[in-house]
Length: 216
Image (cartoon, rainbow, N blue to C red; front, top):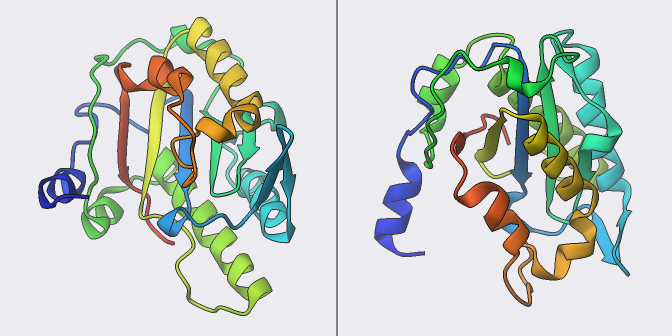
């Protein structure tokens, strides 16, 4: 990564004017530190979780149990060797994404400084949920492997605001079929090509960004 690229990734470009505590659906991706494959392996298009992968799965849904504003389902979540994808519903999960159109649809990329993002993170927000999950999963992972305090996750995470039922269905399919495309996955250190499905879904879509995700 060049100096200019590192500088670009450090910028804070959160979606201006968007309230991340409001009801809606968000597609989230969280990646391990240095893209290390910690959670298992993909065999013949099927993800086989190891003990650490099972911890991540358990903590994702356990985090929602203590946050009544968050709704999660197994059909909208996958643990990959070095990252996770999931859909997080905040508030009234019975409503369709198209029901939440009261904010401007403007997208951005970037990484916010950890300290500033933490100070500005509102309670009951997407960022608060992600920080809690990352912290709980990292603590259990480090306890299991005897590495107290080790960094498990990248500081940033990626999120995409889901605004239509069509987008929701396409993202659900992407999550469910993610293991089949591991050989092309952008997070796979040994990827054999480019994942055009990701590009078509997210790279050109508005409302997609990355920012600091809090604890390791």
